[in-house]
Amino acid sequence: MDETAWRDPTLRNPASATWRRRGSVTRRQVFLALPGVLGAGALARHALAQDAWPARPISIVVPGPPGGTGDVIARAMIPILTQSLGRPLVVDNRPGANGEVGTRFVARSAPDGYTLLLGSIGHFAINFALRPNLSYDPVREFDPVTLAATTPNVLVVNPRTVPATDLPGFVAWLRSRGDRVSYATSGIGSSDHLTAELFKSLTDTKMQHVPYPGGPPALTDLIGGNIEMAFFNLGNVTPHVREGRLRAILITSPERSNLLPDVPTGVELGLRDLVVTSWQAFAVPTGTPAQIVARLNTELGAALRDPTVVRRMGDLGFRIAASSPEEMRSFQVAEIQRWRRLIESQGIRPD
Image (cartoon, rainbow, N blue to C red):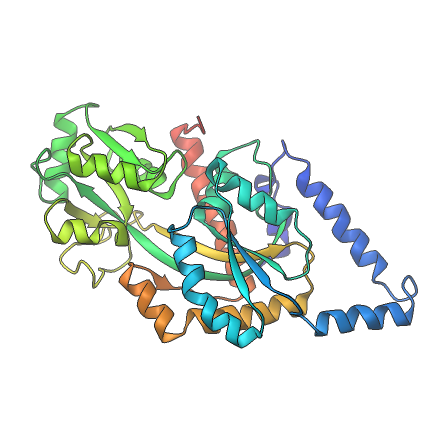
């Protein structure tokens, strides 16, 4: 990534001093590692310690509950990683505060390669763009390792309350209802929330946001007819669309999905900017030795590309997106900037 992106003031959180604290520690670590500051024996021991990695179990922190997307991805990969790294890996679920609890825990962990974060678009990008008082900095306090997987969102409606069957009919129906249509999301600042706000801006329509404490209760109310519409991850709605409980209007991927091949993309329907993916990625605390990051990138990439993991993720509507650390960082920065622009233009607030 271009070094100037690191210095872009729009990517800093001025209300938080945590990134400055992490940055000063990192500079001190670099200073202490300079020849002449540490003796040759200490440098040799430091190198041997890194060469011996991993020497004990590794934790993958998921800032969400068991059964969530990150949890499923991590558990699918663990058997492969345990064999390739020769050490046990464990999933450490740390939900709370829209993912802030678990993400902050990793940011404060030792940069030794034994604590990994498997976070989402919310943890790595949207929270930072939306919440000025966020207690961690996802750019300054983490070294990227690899993207993991991506999935599009699907615009779904309740067929008992919404008569429209295609996008032109749906937009016309929305406009006829004024601001009396409600859309459900898994929470303020979630991917489904910002996708709906992007849809509103692109179609010049109005809807009322009804945030829920997670996806399952929002989906339940949509199916029950208490809410008219929502944008949800592909895998979460596929069985309900197939069985007729929900009707899919469009999908936000660049191309159609083989899980719902009859559902057109927003691009096909003239909404060129309605390309949105919810994504997961791996990172480690800033200052983790480069050779450990490189080894993790290799091993995680191999596990993600394993046929069993590809098949499992494909069944859930995800595509594998293994990348280099540099590609992940560039993608992350672009996502922060994209969603910050939307948040500011739409006046979206975290509460």
